[in-house]
Length: 399
Ligand code: GLV
Ligand code: MN
Ligand code: MN
Image (cartoon, rainbow, N blue to C red; front, side):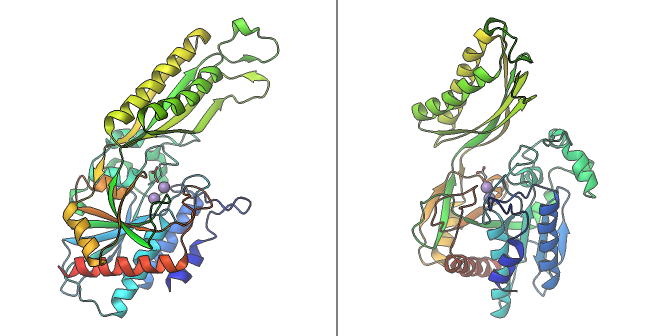
């Protein structure tokens, strides 16, 4: 199967015909179909498939001498944000299978295993915590907290894992698996307009996190409740959205409220509660923290006159990630001097960098759009990405 054939096979899975956006949430039917596709591609290549304890999958190519350690891991994720693009995640996995095919055609002699990983719930679109599979693997989230996370229908992560045939009590850090891996290199579509050449190498990921704002008021009739009697959580919520923009401008960060849940959500009813999620990112921890503190303060101030309560909970936070310098330089050398660039997007490679040398390759995105249907990479650039990944894997797996 060529890159293009694999790409075409995945393209319709979870795609909304009206918008062209993808809805591939962890362990929902479209994502399960992507997982089945992954297992088929592994089987077709005779790559043994490992299901780890945390919902991640790895397809292995072992050297002929049976070596099982110091593996070079690559891959990405199959899940998407709501209405996401086709490339964020799957490009890294399809490219990895295509790179393995190239290496095999060229008769590459491995001294270290190559693994292709599909990490679970990278976007956190279902359970709220981004990179959940790699966080569990790396010990970056308390397994008890992960088990209790709920999706939009109130189903816990533990229940969903159990339904998928996994043991929720077994999730958590996996030093056996990590101990077999020497490094991780993730190929990903670039998510802005910062890459002018077909392929680049990542330098860093900016600090970023998610915070849940709960506004609790009192549900009541939209026609019969006098303004003075209302405890309307919608009003401080609106203040919070505007405060996020102001705080981001003041602090040189970015802040986004992209998801909100209104209960009960009736046109003719004052809401009883509003839950809104703040995503904040910036060049330095202090600036991101200040942004969130200022939004929290503004939300409380806006809530007081309306007798609405506000609760703020941090759902996830990732400090600045500077990718391993030696590995990054090695990739740049292997590629004959690729451009090096930072990113404002989070990745499993960022989470795993706390435990392993990690690096990333980026493929140019001519639209500069991501997490939306217009996300794009030209086929020629994707194929350049496959060549680059093959060169990097070849170099690393020989060493
Ligand atoms: C993941 O893509 C993120 O940056 O949120
Ligand atoms: Mn993403
Ligand atoms: Mn991604």
